[in-house]
Image 1 (cartoon, rainbow, N blue to C red):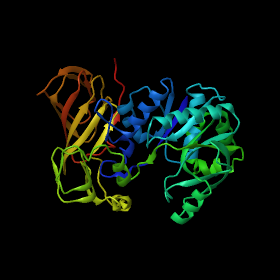
Image 2 (tube, rainbow, N blue to C red):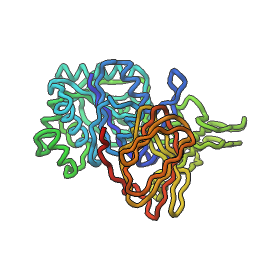
Image 3 (cartoon, helix red, strand yellow):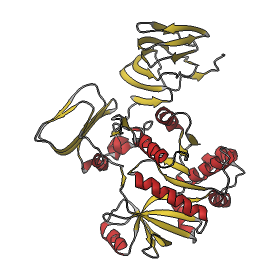
Length: 438
């Protein structure tokens, strides 16, 4: 089974645990069978591999998410990188071309496209296998998964099928309605449009060539910034006459807000938190190394990270985005392909950062022109390379790096380092990558 997971969005509705670098799908809040916390993307990837161990998974995403994906899923997952955001049709066209031109998958093979962040159980992935098989049979150009609605939602578009059969033709699509109209749709047998569908690769390639002037994946990637922003529904689905829908009646939740996310949480507290006995329907998610105490609260979400703290009525938390848009703050935490960093202190001419490198990983070999750095090793074993000179490092070692020096650090075991940046102009743009001679 070939699967493309769409991983977009900035995750501002789940601030402060998500930001422009770490979207909601990378927040670790779900417990797996081993009792460890995992993120939405880790959970979905694990479930896919459980349903089909040989499944080929490609994630369509922006450049800013690549490091987090490698950090959480490893280096073997396929990634179709969008140079910039151009909505779902260009993203899916690029991912389709990536599968054929980069991964060498036959145009005759089917692929399933779905969001990376639904909260679902194993029956959903069995349904994806069925959806893939229907697309492979070729009886319809496009096969959608229609979610059996559990209430008249204003958040989703609706698919109206021609019959109540498990698989039927699509009569029409309806945009996101008000509650009354949504109930009218449901009474007509409408299904939620969850953005899950399957097709043979050649079908979308043909549609893409009809709408975009390009030769192959590499040409499309180069031209990507010039493409018109348009959704897959508008560009393809709503214009297709040979289209079917398959019903899915299992659990399916879109965890896009704190309110919906807490409904899927198995625990009321993640991180250091205490709820007294008078609290009702209160959830705490705390990434800070200090406790949060809640007393006498009802229907409240408390989330804290290095980015900030939110204390909100759960229903009101859905309206967070304009307030977060008004907050101008640098990224305080991010996952990288080699590990993660957390900003501890920011002064006018200095910044102090806690860096964790995963065993067997290293930073890029790089230099800075406008700042010095001082690294203090807190734990673990590794090596530094400064201007070509390699030396081992252990807890207590201090490495001073002058502006202009090329440097990297390599983790032989998990390595924790305190990095102090010193300079009048400390910016993320002040970084030049270099090739490291073996």
